[in-house]
Length: 327
Image (tube, rainbow, N blue to C red):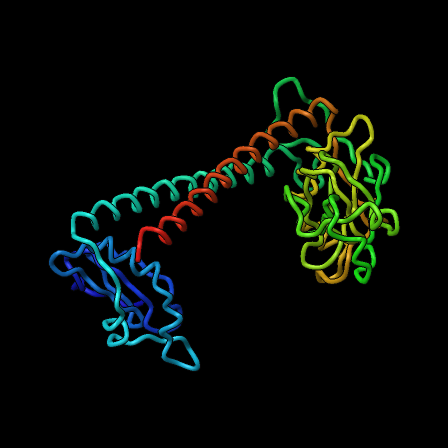
């Protein structure tokens, strides 16, 4: 580890990669020291360094890559890039707008991270540890031991299929076709027609059903369906019987994903199946406690989704402003 005694600059600057990652500008707060693969620039008279940082964000840096191997930029190339700059007063107004927007973005990002940490902590505390029947933390009025059940005895299961891709009449209809990467989504890339549904093994699921991914990279992922739609063979629909709560079961499956993969898929390879999932043993408390736990996580998930949506809208707003406030 190298330590230094002298700073490079007494004023804030903008950094840009010289080699490697050349398209991720950084705002450098003084005092700072940089690695040798990073250029930095400070502002001259009648130039606002924060505005320069914004300019660096709209430049297509990969266009100026000078290497056939590791992406590279030169000081001369950067110096010769031509751009349009308003008067210093307007630069100041624009930079204040975007830095205020960035602060709001960071606020929502931190909120999402904090909520995710809270959720992770609750998953560890509100569910019993391995080989235990009492969780570390419980809601008032609940004290009975949890009981283990095989999933096959507490729910109904089915998976779907895929209509022939060679028949165009089977697609571009009005039925959302949910694939394993979309089990937590409110929309789908593909849509089936009624004809496609009728002439295939695709099965309908409804909002509120548990969707469990069986195949490939998403194996073991779980979600509560947010839409009515059809599923293919890579998804298992799980419909709990009376006395078993969907939100509780979803969270249990999410918490135990790694253990399930390790137990039933050697080395994490291969696919899950309906037969395997039915053998999974789940610890259940009373139905009232299941509902209490399920609602708690439902509220946290709703808050996370809310902040994620706000974050996405702010990112879209920033992108729009960057595209339309600069020449």
